[in-house]
Length: 115
Image 1 (cartoon, one colour):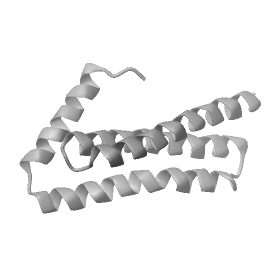
Image 2 (image 1 turned 120 degrees about the horizontal axis):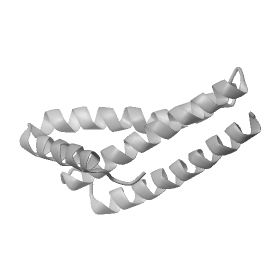
Image 3 (image 1 turned 45 degrees about the vertical axis):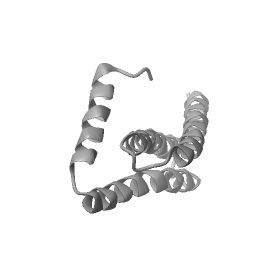
């Protein structure tokens, strides 16, 4: 998905918000948020293996895809606000993007097989 002005403005807003609030509160809240979205990726992929139907399987993978994309957002915001080093960001974003591409392909394949 191409970056839109709205997406860029929302990132800019988040970064400015993070930089203006108390460091301890921000660190806890953001750590919790990215931990939830980041670990949800694997949980939904794992859950998809025991899906009740093909549509349930696709749904679980699509949820994992959405969580992956959200995690990419948080990684970028944390990096640009100085809360995540470039080294850690580059390592994590590369893996998240790889998972996202795999999830897109898996969803596409599953949908084609479901027709």
